[in-house]
Amino acid sequence: MVGERPLGLSFRERMVGPMGRGVDNPRVGAERGRGAGTNLAGNFVVTIDDLAACVAAPDHPARLSGSVSFADLAADAPVTEGALHLYVADAETGMKQLRYRLTFTGQDGMVYRLEATKFIRPGRATVKEQVTAYARLFATDRNAIVAAGILVFRLRDLPAFLCSMRAEGATRSVGVRRFLAFARRELSTPVPVLAT
Image 1 (cartoon, rainbow, N blue to C red):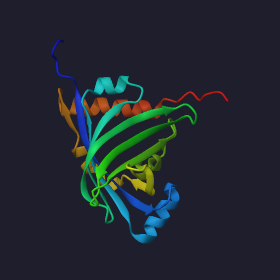
Image 2 (cartoon, rainbow, N blue to C red):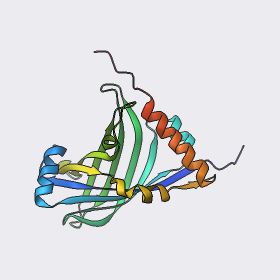
Image 3 (cartoon, rainbow, N blue to C red):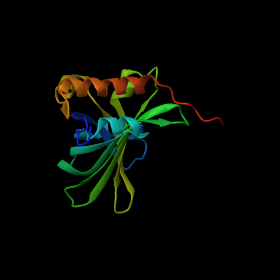
């Protein structure tokens, strides 16, 4: 119907994990971060303005806002530019990716870019795959790596995550049901792998 408001959805997601400075490999960075006690915490708000358009687009885009804290670099620094792409198919690996991309200004006045990705095997995704993001932090002025590590959505935060879901243009139950149906479909649909 003309002028009908599209169904939108938003939810909160907290991700936290060790990040080590001066390395590019997230696994190495996580080990270094654990030893140094340097954790990064992201308190994110994911907003899908039009769920039908998000589902139809190949990269399933959403807006990402919230805040980032990391060691002495940032304390609840607001996300200035953020995007989340849900279940993006990677034809080279046959996996699907959740790509978090955002910028924030550190306490030193510099702008930083955080890139974090979850790698999921459709049809046989483990819980660990669905909650684990491999992350890199860059200084945007020189595109230099600052830190790398592994961020995790903790299962103890699942009740808060579910309670945070809000719908626009429909009831909450309709919005949540349609989003979860989209997620289930993406988790079960295989990705055609390019022939080598």
